Image 1 (tube, rainbow, N blue to C red):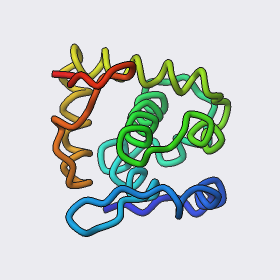
Image 2: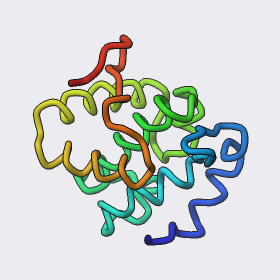
Image 3: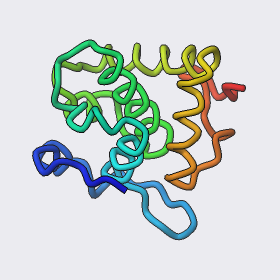
Image 4: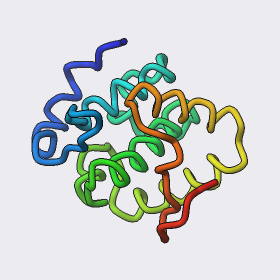
Length: 136
């Protein structure tokens, strides 16, 4: 597994410890989420620190936003504070577009399922952004 850049750690420090998800007696942190995302997006190493709107940077940000809300119970403001040029409204929009991409884009869905497998999470636990319905 590829390690994340040391430049990302200061951004994660203020919310890394209190927000955790327990899966198989193992605490899942935002650092674990970033490491799992980097298994599928190797060329987007500093995706949290770039302002670029290229797909290779935007897709990992969408996945990060969705997973942090669904499995780490982070607020939109907490997530936005760790991503350059994001505020809470962009986080909400990212989660909504994640739902659409996951439903209709096969390659995106395949990457997300691989990321969830790395984290040890069942993909059927993903829910829609504004309701508790399953995405499938």
